[in-house]
Length: 222
Length: 221
Image 1 (spheres, rainbow over the protein chains, first blue to last red):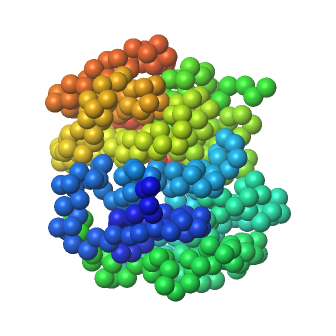
Image 2 (image 1 turned 30 degrees about the horizontal axis):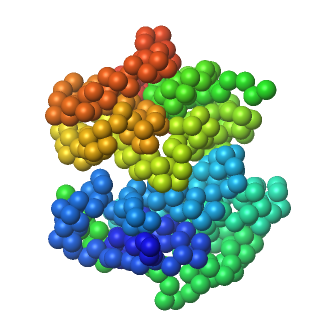
Image 3 (image 1 turned 90 degrees about the horizontal axis):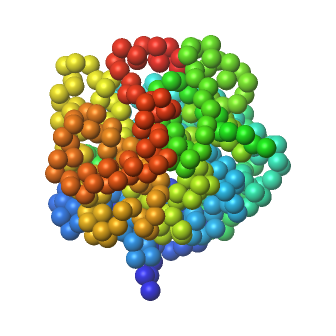
């Protein structure tokens, strides 16, 4: 048997964190290999395990998967977090892609120069409160169900709770105009697998700090 | 009945072109509604039809779909261009995501100011010939089949052809060292639906030129 999925990435959130969230939400245990030096990264490339010379890498079911979205789609499909038919899938994909755009801003934030940080933070706040959160607030209000799509826990719910918590770390009051999202946050946080992931000692990674930024630049410098 | 899919975007490739390719490859006729001015964009926004206030937007099967990946995923699955099982899907997704990375680079090329063009081209050549093309050349070599995944046409093939042609627009001899990609290109271009899309007068769009950029920017900003 293949054993547990094995994740190779830096010891930090970056592009791997949504994968950690999704596996954890699905109740799947996984192993991690952390890249700390450029030499380790170059060895991976030399060994030919990175299809496009990039991480994230997830070894799962005999495959060496790369490309975050490919990895997430596979996990969602495998663990029944991708809706029951093509149309539910379409909704989940739209929601997940929208959230990914917001998360991209958060991903890039630590790497912006100091003088741009305040402006970037304002942009994140603006986009979250004017473009993205209102959509999900409305979805939840209109159907009155606990989950975004098909009255069933899906990848979209995991992505949304991850995003809410990530934005709140930067802007603690961001949910103040969104009562449905506040209730959603509590419900999701109390789901057993997610509750476990939110406890100290889980594979969840802390917010990026200066040391993480330095490691990224060191390992991936061109 | 649902009617033909209707695509809302500006009259150019951008983030809608891959959708056009997939629909065309699947033999699906579609209509297009072009944004020409900021007013057109404002009208769409005011009609509340853009879920995240952005285009592309495709009206299909009673949905107003946004987010190009969601749109392409739906079309690929609906028209059997997404493999036969989860593992084939996984391979297709990996191939397609990397092609999207390369496409971003290629699309940006025509918009580079004159003094940056040469350096940008060097980056394209480096990434295309060292990171991306060798992967697809090897895939085709290893299994010796006509198509990238599962011995049948999939979105991976359509998107690879789209990318190969765009790459050659940047530098005509970019495929020189990749004989299997060259034969893939020739073979896939001859698939009837794709051949039709490659003919003048089809809905395929030309590359955006630097001079067209101000007009496009005005629509969105």
